[in-house]
Length: 225
Length: 307
Image 1 (cartoon, chains in turn orange, purple):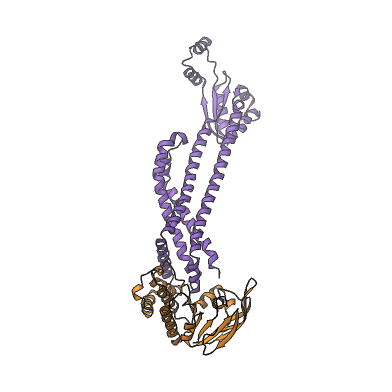
Image 2 (tube, rainbow over the protein chains, first blue to last red):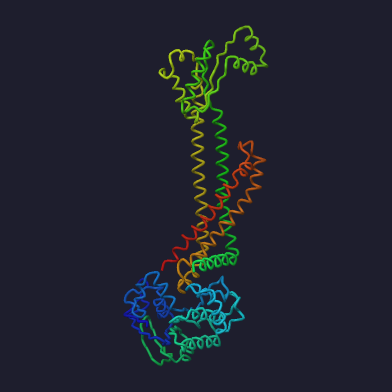
């Protein structure tokens, strides 16, 4: 589904990623682990075409993501749900509106929005906070809202960049369970983390990065650094 | 589909406008100042024009005829003058009128009046007072008389003198002052408008800069450029709309005050001017507000929408 083909990314002269080759198939749950600065976030940004590779290419199915036109890129991004460490919610919109925006953005009808949003809010246990603004929510609630926003459009892939980085252990566990549940329904999930407990709880494929290179790629991985 | 999207854009723009609180107030304030400057400059131009017109009115050229000139000949000169494109108005003062005016002017000067009486005859000649379309044209009118071909020989001889040459320096100076004042007024207006436009543009740019995170999230969620841009443009239009209404209201007391205090100085009553041009001014303000607001938003957001 996603292929990294000899990808190298440099910022000026600093190498962020070097000679990366990865193949991710549909329905997989992949954890990308590594210390800060190992290149985890750069990897996710390359998939989202927020960054362009210095060398090599990234494919989604058979299309080179970085050669898409502006319009096609917009269409491509609709197939991906994104969750960030810093949540990146729309600050001036309520929880409900944040989720609704994701549906509005891809042109869904009002009727569908009215049906689906309460459903997803219930799934992430935020029904009672629907009219709260992001700054009125706790860290765990914000991240659950971000996940709700990511899944509402039923994307083919969920990319979660350090989704538990700002959360306490209980919230972390909630978020991981939520992501596992989404994966069980058939969505490909790519998560980056440096949290040992998260990786050990998932018990799925683990790709370990060190200084921009892949040092380990285990099918049934454990956290080893 | 289009109506649904437009509705969403308007709702989102309105919400972000009302929820931004202080930021919205700040942009309305800056926009109001810009519109205030633009409207003030329109007022100043109106005042300046009326003052300059007053001065222009005071400039004229008078052709004096010899005292034994035939009235028919003078009328002929008057007709030929009226045909000149530079001439706006010619007024004829007969010998008798000239005498009456002279006596009125010197009604307290007993000696002069007595001397006039002793002459017995009316020593004053008739005259034609000429007003040009523009002060710079007096010279060509004066030259018209010097050109012998323009007037027949007999007409030429009945002219006693033309006071253009005595007035030349004053007329030239006034012409250059009027032209200078116009140019300066225009340049200052242009600079002030430019400055206030830049300030407004920068304010809106800063506000959109604060939303750049929001824009990048929307992009990552696969929202179309138009759909992201729409609410920002609508907010910009809203700012322009509200600012123009505030400005139009502010100018009511301002023009009343200026009308009471400054009418003699400026030459026109600004409140009367404001009343008679209200619709025009309101459209100018509304138009500038909406255009500045929306165009600034479009420019400011453009850089964040590139992929």
